[in-house]
Length: 288
Length: 288
Image (tube, rainbow over the protein chains, first blue to last red):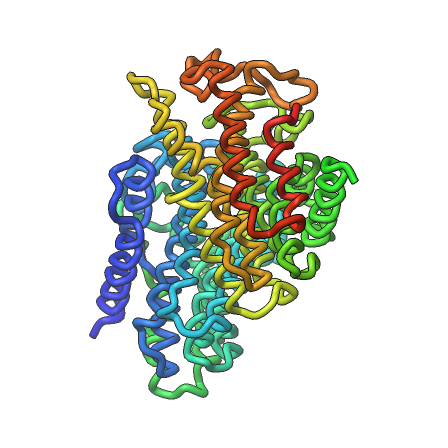
């Protein structure tokens, strides 16, 4: 099976689980939450499911955690797109939530999607309470003021800073903004399977950075219709990116080196890790 | 000891625990999070601590949960005050977060305070993983699209509705907006103590509604300097409140009846529940 087919199948499964949690109300709040959890690649949810499967756990047990990280990711996109933040009107090829509804609905839908993420981690299907609480602690750490939101705050600070970011600054910013959640996703599968999460942490840390470098490359070379969002925004804003600091070819070779690092971390798992290997290569070859 | 002194002592303790979790960074994001968790009555945190104490649990075990609910409450106030929501410039006698910093910082500080709430519930000081995960599940349910955020969404919907809310509508709205978190707080103490949370749920459900009716009364009769926020906003916005629907005297007697209900729920606990009884009376006698 093509990797992109496997990814799409998992994304559909995760979306079904999420929409089951959001069923039963026609309030704009719930409509907006369902809307914001449609589409997207589903990379984070896939990483939860696939790392659990690779380590022998039933994917059904990992499904609530996969849905949780996609809910959390969707919340961060809604809030990131708000006028006071990145002021984006297009996401996943559709109008952003505050454009389709209004800002208040977007703020509240994001808030409630974050809450839903933690609620999903209390689903007893995951396993014992120790496993669930470890997932809650890890997701909170990855998502909050030491992780994703820290990355977003550093990003906002960079926009008004008088000096350009260095490669180290950007790496730190991205480790929070996108890296922490991607790393949590791969680790979560291992935690659910009762395995040591260390190799998957190494894999996903390299993958997360490669993903972000690929995003910066796509921002310059990509097709907005395929990407489903506005491009060339960073250059227009005069923001330092991996491409502006390393050049297009330098960024490409850095991303490739990171994919090699990610694959190296999978060595202990042999052929069982082939899907995660495909995933690493997909991340830098994608057009969206 | 006066009840208000007991309340202030617990609030200080909870704030110290929260600020320990927020130490070590001078980013505006962290400054804003510390700022937003200062002041306030600390009623929710107090309910966690006092119900745990009444049922024989060490308050140290309840402290992370008390800090969690105050972090969650602080997040909800920051987002509620945003221009796209209630557009308030004054809170707890100080400029609101988006006025003192900016909207982006207010959005992110609120987001990270919600995350912090769930992170605090993973503190092993609380007890075993079963207890913590029950608290996470309960807080998520109380805070999300079935609880607090639902109440906020109904409140926003009411502002643009062409028909006035009925008493039943307002009761439902408030049960979400303020009731769910107050109820979780009292129940949390019982869960930490390993006791049946049912009587405290009854107590806190009545208390939460009395609290909101008292808020509506204060909005009409209160002193903005003492309340630390703008008043007479509901009447100016033409919003239905318990006062507009029941009249001032009707609202007062409804609040008193609810305080009696709350006290009746405490009967099984005898004199050990005296502080919670004082709390119920305080809720309708307060000036802030």
